[in-house]
Amino acid sequence: MRAPHALRRTRTVAFALVVSFLAGKISADETEFVTARITAGQIRGLLDRRIAVFKGIPYGDDTAKRRFQAPVPPPGWDGVRGMFEFAPMAPQGGGRRTGLDPAKPGTTISEDCLHLNVWTPGLRDGKKRPVLVYFHGGAYSNGSVNEDLYDGEHLCQRGDVVVVTVNHRLNVFGYLYLAELGGKEFAESGNAGQLDLVLALQWVRDNISEFGGDPGCVTIFGQSGGGAKCATLMAMPVARGLFHRVWTMSGQQVTGRTREHATADARKVLENLGLTPDRIAEIKTFPMEKIMAAARAGNWTPVVDGATLPRDPFAPDASPLSADIPMVLGNVHDETRNLIGGGNLALFELSWDALPAAIAQNVKPFIGALMPEKIITTYRELYPAYSASDVFFAATTAARSWKGMVRESERRAVQGGPTWIYYVNWPSPSDGGKWKSPHTIDIPLTFDNPEQSSYTRGAPGAQQLADAVSDALIAFARTGNPNTKNLPAWSRFDLERRPTMIFDTPPRLENDPRGAERKLFERAPYVQPGT
Image (cartoon, rainbow, N blue to C red; front, side):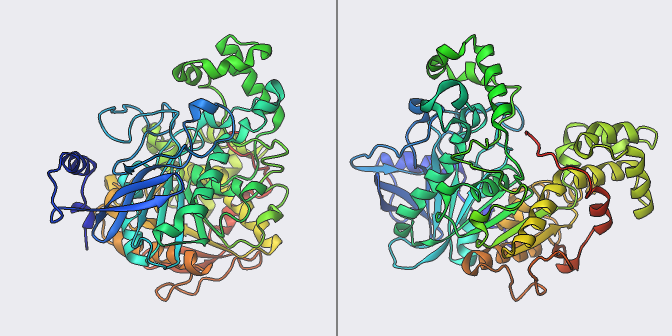
């Protein structure tokens, strides 16, 4: 098994190279620098194992200047700007974004957060490579692409593609809906974070040819919240024509927030700041930290505002705006083992007596009148060997994380849009196998970076599976079809057979896997988390 990441320059080493270069201490034998010209000016990056890498490229101006408004391109510059390190990420707090280290490049937070990173095998060589644009998870509130997990080098080397990863506004800064309270100035505030992604895609359209990419062959892909952002873009008229394929991983956006709910959240934030609607303009002058503190209890997701997002992305049907765009939807078999269990390890030791209450607390809000006892009885009949904890994680996965993908895939099938479905069933051996196939496990597989995740690092079969998944992504980006010579024939999704690629070792195609679980929950209404 190869382990090229063991040889890759770490951020610290790269930073040292840059400092040495600026001091005139680096020779051409030690490293090589490359330049590119983009709409804003000239930039310099590093050539690492024949892959040109540019980090922290600004695609938008400092958002502190335009809080709760649509972004604008950055001002131009003279000379050549070095793009060697990740730039600051969006304001955020809590979750996995605690303990930020200001001394480590790319870990600070700032409203000047509209930056992207590019990996490419060629500059100005006349080739038209498929372009893969990645949006990170963390729902709409946290996260960043400033991690080696999202490094695009292996995809570039494997498939001769260009990889772009994007940071954008999150939480209250990206999704505070002030239009009903603040008027025209804030008309697009509820979807500012989505408009950041549109601006990033416009940057790709205008600049990616310089990096050997084809602006007419752009695939957007994302995991968890990143997949939801992709789904939302599929219903946004302003994004039409900026991407040509969609690959979502454990992330769906069936509905957005209503204007009524979004306005109620906005009123709470204003109240916490001591502002009345007639003083709403003052919010632009408050310290970033104070706004974050005032908004901790809010729900921050895209808003169906009637303009930027004119309708729900996948309700009551799939948006016709993207009916012609090929789409791959995926989930993993055990989404909630880390999503819920990671913060409450006692759930791995549930008794049968405690299970109904755990189901009621974590599942019932999503499934209405379906009683916990019915859920438990059904699972015990389907899977006699399951423990109480196994039933808990299976039911929470099916009712919460998986059901949104089922709805989206069904509505795509009715629409006739070209659609393929996958599940990752491969069980990670990490921590004695307790996580099985958890949320995020498809990220290192898709990026062909298995050494960058504890779930896959050094695991037998992980590289073999990463080969299969990343090859499928590259084939999809190039042709609009994920089939490869090393996979079983992967049929388009339809409601009669429900063909699904099971990524395991080896991969296999199954019709309607876990169909009994799907039928158990199919009559229950789906409630989009955060809405």
